[in-house]
Image 1 (tube, protein in one colour):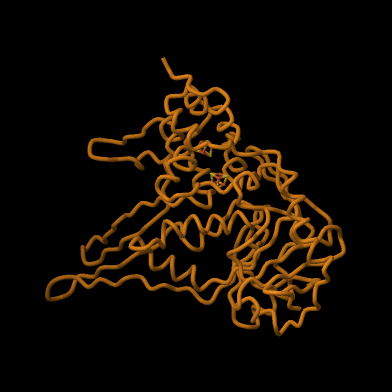
Image 2: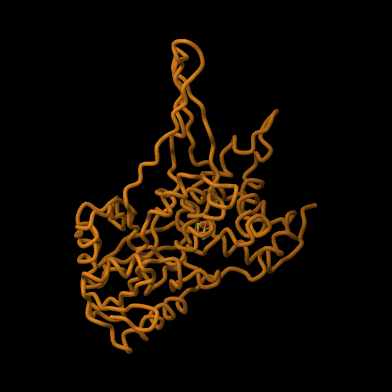
Length: 375
Ligand code: SF4
Ligand code: SF4
């Protein structure tokens, strides 16, 4: 099943790959149906992998629906992203215990991460991990737990054969096709023929596929892979404004910030669902005896009241300043900080915003009517 530098085979049933990984001792985290949504959780058995489902998404709306019964991957991203595993929502950093004689003993929390597969990672999600790598594993700025989890995780990607109405990865150059950053990629070919093109992207991936002895893909099947994702890209109706970083830099006093703020509930759903948001708060707690203390890190959000607290009060109290901070950081100042965009076009912030605020629509408003400043 080798062709040039890459390796291609054909798989009829992806649960066989899940079963092989489980038999080899991997913990498989992948898509599962819970509370009528696709979430990323540990798969208990290969049959946990959903089949015959698709999703309907728009501003403030997510519905899981019946799709073609034979197909495996016709839904796209749900409310979870892989950051909940690599950068957990709440994490104990260390425990301190007072010693009998004097002083404290500090026990740093161990990194508990068995060999793990992320199964079903989409292109925008690989791009989001690359964004978070810049934050958590960047030279002298290194989160050891994040880096260890990332290094010990095998990536089984899925090429998107369809886009949701909220997807705009094509305009961010982050999808829907996966080009790099995976160990194995699966492309469910068009139609209902039950053919999944399997591509090895690393030696680790090749070693896992070898015992499966998959039949080789034909040239036609290999060529059908890019055509599948091209069709998904062509179907995307939303797009990010080109040069949005400059548009926002020049529009900090735009009247539209007030218009968005009138609708925004400051609920923070957009930041929690976003696969790249990385802000956290650190809290120290002690017991009543004063002999035992813990330090915890938890996700935070630009929309939390205390997020911008400095001595004397919060700097950003209004929904206008909170939303402006979120959007300008994602799309403009992130470039100054990390030399890339903080948005990968996954559309989660649109779908999971309870009032349907749409980052592409707002970007379009700022670009179409530049510079109307408040009086
Ligand atoms: S800002 Fe919205 S579309 Fe962009 S990565 Fe975050 S959730 Fe996805
Ligand atoms: S933009 Fe939407 S999701 Fe984000 S804080 Fe405002 S209401 Fe909540």
